[in-house]
Image (cartoon, rainbow, N blue to C red):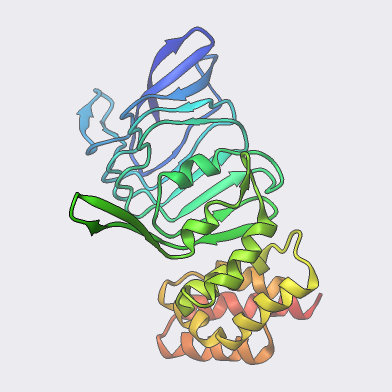
Amino acid sequence: MRFEYTELPDGISIDAVYGDMGDVVIPDVIDGKPVREISEYAFSGKNTDSDTGDGIEFRLAGDVLGFVTLPDTLRKIGNLCFYQCYELKSVSIPNTAIEIGSDAFMNCKKLDTIRIRGSVKEASSLRQILLQRTSATDVWFEDAAVHFSEYTEKYDLIGPAHIFELNIEGEGFRARKCFDGDVFDIRMYDDVFEKAADTEDEKTLCKMAALRLSRPISLDDKIKENYLSYLLDHMDRYVDEAIKDKDLSLIKSLGGEGVLSDEHIAYALKKMTAVRWTEGVAKLLSWKKEWDNK
């Protein structure tokens, strides 16, 4: 992997990344210089290729970039840095103060996962990122996991003199307000779940409950029971979605926390067998053996 950069007084700013795959890990230090910034439009647009003499290399950009890990030394992501990165699905960021430029993740239509390398109790740049995004997003801290549902904004004309009223639909907006400065307030998020029961669909509520239960930091017994009760009442729907997406990561976490019963596991195995997902069956049986031996 090759990096083009501009030198700064205290480090460098990444201008472009070249390689042969869609996963990018930007190191803390390149050529002895700490990485401080990602430049404007650094990953935007389409990938291009060039012949270096040693083979063809690709500028990793919008239509191939899939996963990005940003360095601990980072202080700034430039404006429109990931503009139109249509294939970008996941970003890993440190729990440090990073300035997020305007529309940095604009038109990242598949971006649904943010991983923060730190505790939910520590300050991070999550609030800045979420303020720019209205689509559904899973956020994984080292000790917590939460789901932010999609919400919509629209302006309705309420008067003849071009007077408009902003209408917001979806509890995802309220969930994005659960911050004390730059620290995510997970207890405030738990209150949002109670209100979301009247407005969000089963799929969204199951995702909120499943992520929260998978890493249950600062979760008191009463709130835990609310999450658990909803998830168990709708477990068939949740399992169906997990199998449809071929993603058992949360089921693994829930099993490790003792949330899944033998009946739930049997249901999942039956469903996976019906769609001939043998890899999923093998994984779940292996995990069940581990859980039974705890």
